[in-house]
Length: 274
Image: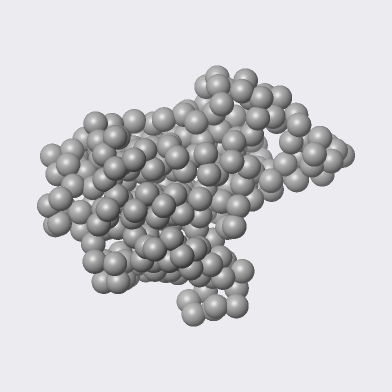
């Protein structure tokens, strides 16, 4: 792929070793971008697991010959997001690509049994956090006058909602709508905005879901994984590295005519309500 040399990318939600954020950050670095990796952790707490993850990913990026920055951030905090953007530009020189990956799974329950606090927490991270980062990044990209690319991590559940996942489904559907609106608004500035809608990707979050099902139904995690795999027409669960390829394509010159899209990545699973 082309178009990454001299570009700077920012990826949020990079705190997990087996996560989409880390995979995307490393793929963008392999393609030639300098990368700032961000995640939520206590400021200055370098002993926390999440912070070590950020630092380790930044070190991996540097071993690829690219510059890197590791930034602690709460994407729901406007001041800290502004500080993240300022630090990224200050250390790496500019901002060209943003992957809004940070998100929360949310509570699993019937919608009418969710507490307002549980609802707000999920919406705050998945929707409001994506908006806060996007607006701050857009201002920088517009000022640079050289275009840019934003990619939002929605979910196939933003397109095909399921019971017991009200806050998550609604927040991810709203991310798709935000993507479409911002794509229209930013097109005159040559800033493209797209959403990816992953299905079953083997991440720490996905494994958490399998573990919940295993405990609820008295099964092993291996049995639950096999059942979930059987739902995918291609017959396998995808890995974060594979999804990172789509992210890199959307950010590349080859994806330069794509904007305002919500792209399913489901291995053929139909987008139907269940």
